[in-house]
Image (cartoon, rainbow, N blue to C red):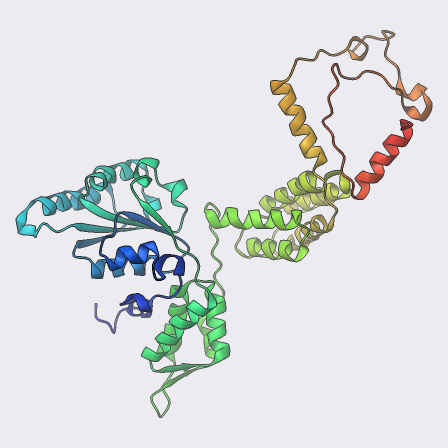
Length: 414
């Protein structure tokens, strides 16, 4: 494939360390990965992070600088037979003078697609040093790579690219393509990229190839052209991946932290990405019980109503009751007293002393000392309800819970 036929993103791959954008914690002066690159002493490693942040570009840069023979595989397509062939050739290459005794660098993209058996095939070759393995993944390796293999890797986490990093990449691409990009068009490309340089460059390439040059030979990219090249923003969201759990975590913590704007934003991210509304509604209901609790009991009712709506409605209508419930829960006073009380009681049941039911509370034990609360003033009478009484419930001081506890104290005459 010639340079002219290669995608713009591939043509813009960094040729030297100064060309890299972002990842200063890995590639900045004096940082470990940069020191390994400069010394050509790279060891087996995992690069993980979101798409388009430079993982593959870094691996290929290593390949261009090292003296090792390089093999690229994609775990989504390669099988055990392919893997064994590469490993056998690597072993022979390391032992046979005719192969110049060169090391073998294996770049394994999407390593999280390999199951345990396939990962176990890699282990002896990595351990012996027959290969230097760079695994690339968008998933958390601690969840997807077995411990035996992971213990032999250095793990480097790549971060999403910031706006300045993306602007640097876009500006360099425009220069090589003899194009001028208006500021608002550049902002649009960057915003829509969502931290993914490959996605940004793919959209920019479409703009470059479909725009006729002016009399000076330059291509002028306006906001209108940029918008035509990105019809719909792509949101990174895998229902079974890290992004799924990160966003639902942010959603719950925003409601718990009383930030309705953040809560409705994360809600919108999930809805736009196609998340099941019932999954979202369940989380709102849990938050209403766990984090709002007795401070505002109506929150549970509203959350339950939203859950019922999610059972009956689809998008776009369901967005309204979900937003209603999420905003209400976020705005409520908070109390986790019921949540803490039941967990403390469960711990006592599992680990504490056994408590038999007192005789006067047992079923069918009429006239055995039980006092019927409604026969007494304020419908309250003091009596033993639990042997060796223990306090589990520590009431909060906000919202309706405070008023509820005050009323309880009054009827007890406290």
